[in-house]
Image 1 (cartoon, rainbow, N blue to C red):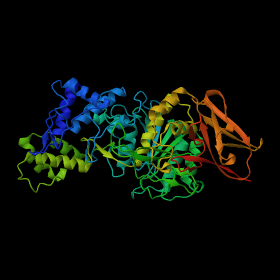
Image 2 (cartoon, helix red, strand yellow):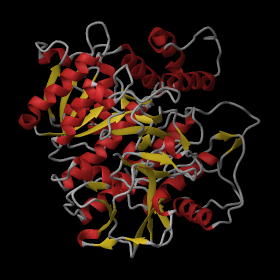
Image 3 (cartoon, rainbow, N blue to C red):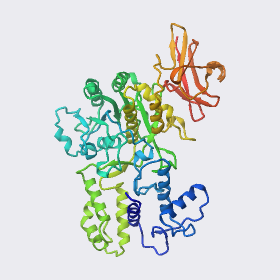
Amino acid sequence: MTFSAAIFYFLWQIKIAKMNNEEKIICPFCNDAVDKLLYRFHSSSEEAIVEKIKLHNPGWTDNDGICSRCLDYFNTEILLEQKMLPEIGPYFPVKSADDFVILPTALRVNANPKYSGKGVTICFIDSGFYLHPDLVKNRNRIKKMVDIAKPKTSQQYFTKPHDESWHGTMTSVVCAGDGYLSNGLYKGIASDASLVLLKVMNEEGKITTANITKALQWVKNNHSKYDIRLINMSLGDDAPGMWKNSEVDLLAEELIAMGIIIVAAVGNDDMASIKPPANAPNVIAVGGWDDNNSLDGNGKKLYHSSFGKTDDELYKPELISNAIWIAAPILPGTPAQETAEALYGLLSTNDNNLKEGIKISSAITGINIENIDEEDIAFWRQKIVDRIQQCKCISPHYMHVDGTSFAAPIVTAVIAQLLEINPALTPAQVRTILFSTAKRLPGLPAERQGYGVIHPGKAIIKTLQNYFSMKQHASPFINKKKKAIEFYIQNPCASHISLAGSFNNWAHDALLMEPSSNGLWKIQIPMLPQGTYQYKFFVDDKLWMEDIDNPLRQPDGLNGFNSILMIEN
């Protein structure tokens, strides 16, 4: 899209929200009526914006002022150039949660577009599915669809929308859609991955433990046939408990031991406990955060995800990802999609025919026409915008959604990128890459974040570096034969690392670890007496790190965790 075309579209889109209010000021750039203009640009970043505006509008000066929305647009243009990202047209960050312009997820998480899950098969276990154009139109990437509750269900069933089709269609497209219905704009990070889709909702509209278990068993029996490396589970069992007492968790751990990576959403109730499969030790449990639908992550709020200790004393989630303002498909052939198409059709209707169009389509759009005699066209255009916002629509085919159900597929898609780069990665190595490159949001509780926000760019770099020693054991390893305990940490950039913990009064310069090949550091200490100990690694005399291999941990009170070592008799 050329810049002039982008600006034309940009102006057209914001014009629909214009209200006829003589008291408002007119922005000299976009000619929209606004409450105020912004002046006085001093900082270097603001100077860059001024230069960007003048480049395409030489007659404008900073004394003329500019509205906040135009300023947002040019700020986004600068951010795109800094990150060397392709132009995405007139889509820009917004300052209001009521706005309906949603940025593409891959852009917001800074995912590398070079990798798209090629050669990787992802299995989705979810309520139900539909053969969505973003998955099949350009190229049918669905290897298999199975109704676990009714195995004899034909493939024809999935060509029509059903009530249970919504959730699974959304999660799979968020992860792996190619953006067919948005001209590539709302493309998933794993847009070239192949899919196996397992429907587990029964005819009564319930997702039972039995059906989740059957789905996992199906993967166990068929993973080689369909080359399944990765499972996304944006659902959970009903009952919490210890993972060894859960058939779902036991099967999940068995699949992980076979080399299959499992990602699960933790849920959306910050007062609820973590349920299977997210409570299993080696399932990657994903919570959420709110980036305020912007490129710079302004706001940095946590989503209301479930979190805390499981019955096995494990802290979940391990990672958080974007869980709100996510572009997802509207299920084709449903009343919701009919409403969206009608609303966006009204947006393009000329002023002369607008009121009649609103009246004719009111039963579909839900726009209140009690004041249809109101002559002000701007009033009715605002009614359309208000209704679009109420329906959470962002185009005739997409809406914005929220929930950890959509944070999990983002993590799943990033893992597909890593497997594309190195298909030999084990579930343990994937955990190490993701956990060691994640970053916690400052000033917010660590137990709600785990290792922090997923960082796709750094995860890919670490995978490309290929720093993976084939260590014999996960850390810590209790070597009964040698009557010793072995600790390991992977850090190719460190100059020195020490081990410190409650067993040596946290002396950070006494237990120095030894470096070996590929950035692996190790140390062996004598067997400790029976008891529970806390420890950390101290890197280059400045950074405390928990043991990523060890799922047992405890908040340290400093926005982090101490790892837990338990020595039994």
